[in-house]
Image (tube, rainbow, N blue to C red):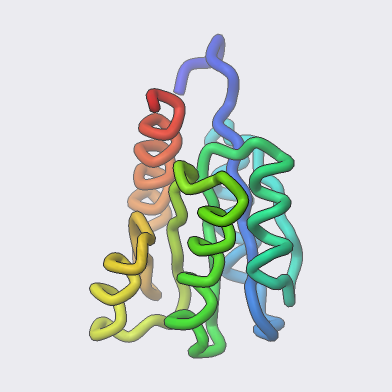
Length: 138
């Protein structure tokens, strides 16, 4: 991303009852340090709240974090809420403690990428950059 270009806007959300947000805050900070504008919803947000905020803030991508094991329900709910509210074009990326066997199911449910523990920050930033670029071009 060049300095002259308007920064990409991303929303980082914590759906459900998961109260552990260290990873989400780490990614939010890493994206901010790379020049992204980051909106962090805080913990314990509903899918509807995350989708409404994403649309209201006109974001280029949404990042979701879940450590509670409810990712198979919560992440697709956010995708569905975005679609319902006219934001089907906003890419959604997810991360957290997600078993390998759940990754394909989440990708099939509409998520653009899934990050598991140990994924390098550079990989996550590159995925957000790609998703935001594609969103802008559409």
